[in-house]
Image (cartoon, rainbow over all chains, first blue to last red; front, top):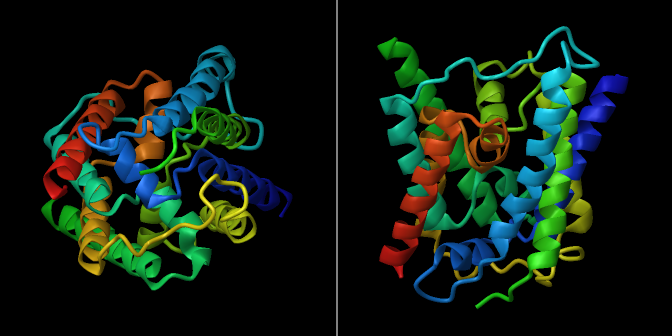
Length: 140
Length: 136
């Protein structure tokens, strides 16, 4: 129970960060990607800020730890080599992000705008994820 | 046209970074939102922590949206329904197939110097920029 509360606090912090950063505004995202038009480079600073904290913390703290405080082991991605799925998937994700100006995190934070378009985006995103999982399962 | 807001962007980014770092230090988990949603879709009952984390995110939206960001209110009128639905569907397929989105690859992956995430991030930034250019 205490752990679940900490997870919620971390989610709260993540969501608050996305809002302060401006990531939850699709217009800002589109302008960030519009480098030949109304370019607004602000969101590059989100990445700089996040990478500074997470990157330094990972290399100076996490790498020296044997296990995390509240769990038995680290749960990190095991794949190290790029493959076709990664390339096609990432290209598709970029296309979808460019079309709507919304990525998964901000979509969840914007849920309480109670705007039908956000719900529509999330439902279509979940359908896309589920279909991909089913096809992946069938192939492998 | 949106205003250039480097300081709030940097501050917000650092908060995201601290959240992701604590999630890893305390629980050994990667803060990738598309991965969390994928977990919920495949095994909804065995990932209590994802429900908690996402619940916290949604609560942040409920409390702060329209107050903490420099945009007074998020205006979705400019986005057509067609773009919203198509974009959502393609984001779902892409993040599932590519095992990550802006948070998992762009922050946690690059922060760990993962080659896969570096490639993924360069690709999705590039195709997103091209898409916005084409859609005008």
